[in-house]
Amino acid sequence: MFSEIVNQKFDEVNNLYNTDFQILDSLKSFILEANDEELFLINPYRLAKKLNINNKSLLKHLFYLTKVGLFDLNWDVHCTRCNWVTETSHSLKKVKTNSYCLNCDFYIDVSFDESVELTFTINENIKTIDLPIKFDFPEQIKSEINTTIESGKTRTVISFLDPGVYTFMCPITLAKGTINVNNEEPNEIQTIEIIYSDGKFAPNNINVMQGSITFLLKNEMDIEIGFILYPKELPKLDISLLDDRVSGFECINMPEFRAIFKHEVLPRRESLQVKDVTFLFTDIAGSSRLYEKLGDIKAYNIVRDYFDILNETIEKNEGVTVKTIGDVVISSFTKASNGMKAALDAQKAFNEYNQRDDVQYKIILKQSLHTGDSIVVNLNDRLDYFGSTVNMAARIKNLCMDNEILTTEKIINNLGVMDVLIDSGINKIKRFESSLEDNEEAVKIYKIDTNVAS
Ligand SMILES: [Zn+2]
Image (cartoon, helix red, strand yellow):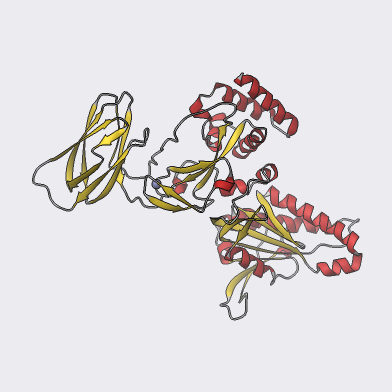
């Protein structure tokens, strides 16, 4: 029954999309042989590694299989301290600006690139999976104790605790408790017995003095349990040290995702932070002259060419078009280097376009690039960005002369961007200062003269 439905869904995908036979084949074998745990909250990059498939290609095929109903998307919100999944939902419309971590007793400011992860679970109508979300305690968090206790056994652990508040928990059953360590010095060895029974630790609120403590951990349940003891107030987690995962932001920056899941947007009136996004503004120089010279219909055809060529260069460099305002195309990238590469590629593509014999009007570009934090919002049921980074990119574009790419210190200081400029043969970057608005402090602007680019 299960295999029949799986086969049918794969056939559907094969008919609808431009697929890779080998990728589909290994995905199908994986699904048919996997146990429940393996089909629950699948991290695509971990699966890609296991199946030896390129990350983005696998992700694309998972999108297809989701669209035909074999998988559900999960938007998992992670605690920025303990990495615990505080919430998960099948729709981006349910992701909120804040989330509460029960484990850390802490409200998270949800950021689209740092705390939202996209995973996949087999569609609940095809297979019901009833599993709790496991707590993967990140190795990089310093724990005082991290052990397991077999059913019916007692484990003895000695730990040296400084004054403070500590949490202990079982990552399997999620039972937990608190230890308050005061700054008094004990006269004798302190021994604490903690019994796990009926799915709970007893006692679960313990007061001790600082120093060496002998823990007697007794498991009276018929399953193995875990015991992790760590400071209650954890510092912010460095997510770059965690396993690779598909961030929500990375996902909305994939053209395939935007094309397949047009309606996956945030709830209205909610906004999510993005810590690091690069915006590219591209415009046609003197477009009003274009309409005057050629008339509306011919001019429109040229502008269509412009949109098509530009879209292609944006998508080729892993970016997406956020929106167009008149002839201005605003695109976003997860990496500054990709944004710069797209700007240079666009310049090159229009240099070639302008040399074609059939071209009636030469398209001259003006482009600006800036990077920083932003907020993602739902504007008229489309994902859009707001904030000072996108405003600054827009204002810099207004300073642009023909064939120029203007950018900022943050972009120029990015190592990947430098490599892209060197690879493209750019050896002239001029710097000037300009205040972008009246009475505002001047900012450093960098001018990349693409006339020398190869
Ligand atoms: Zn937490």
